[in-house]
Image 1 (tube, rainbow, N blue to C red):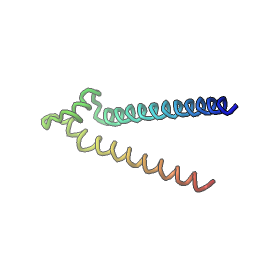
Image 2 (cartoon, rainbow, N blue to C red):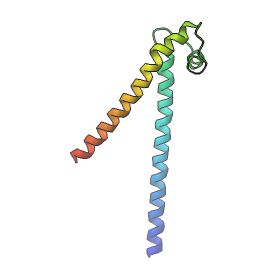
Image 3 (cartoon, rainbow, N blue to C red):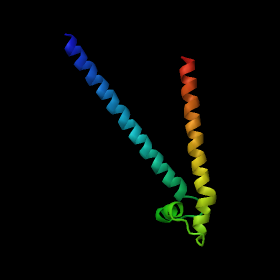
Image 4 (cartoon, rainbow, N blue to C red):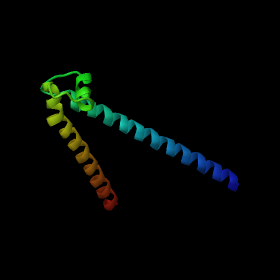
Length: 98
């Protein structure tokens, strides 16, 4: 009886762990897609390859690279940090309310 109970509990733990892992991977994937969209799209429309070229291979002669380096990239990083802070605060508030 005890062995069966342990096996059932292990299966539940594994299913919960797998579910958590899938949700975390989905969240990271959505964060990457949102970051790419935030850096690529704006008033000055540019391609995704040009935007990522500005992030990883900056060329000071290209105006779009300056736009990304001075406006879009810092804004995106600040957005991610603010989102993390708000999520942390919401979790703290939810735990203290119960």
